[in-house]
Image (cartoon, rainbow, N blue to C red; front, side, top):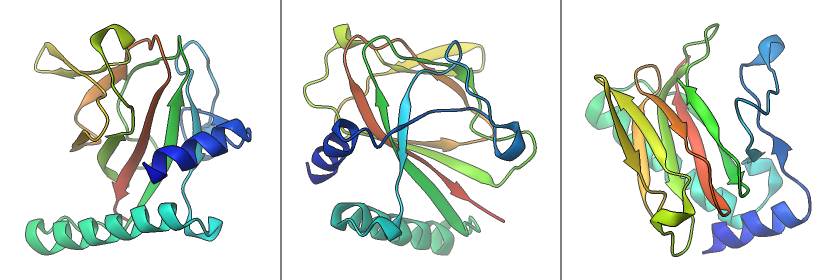
Length: 168
């Protein structure tokens, strides 16, 4: 609830940025491919709920490294807001020029989501498509370089924390 309230206050303060694709010099903004807005989480913001979430991610990374030998050395997370009508076309979460993103995570913060709200995460696997409803409290975790996915058009605001666990 605190993360949802923090996201809302940042959004209403116009702190969000247009989501782009690519990285570094290859960063582009194409509203026909992606139309969400984002806010990067950072301990330097000094926000208690952001820091509590990032501490939880520190513990999760430690657990993965000690039990699954994943070699995760860092992460990056942002709040994501899809306004009504927004979407993100089919893609992988790994850059062509940088393979450091190993695992993708999405944690949904929506309240009372219904099928008519749209905004499902559509995953593409083995010539099949699977739609995942973005219900609040649901988390998705997958290999960044292997699972193509997209966000279907939303009919209402769709909010989440999205991020990547990285190696060097």
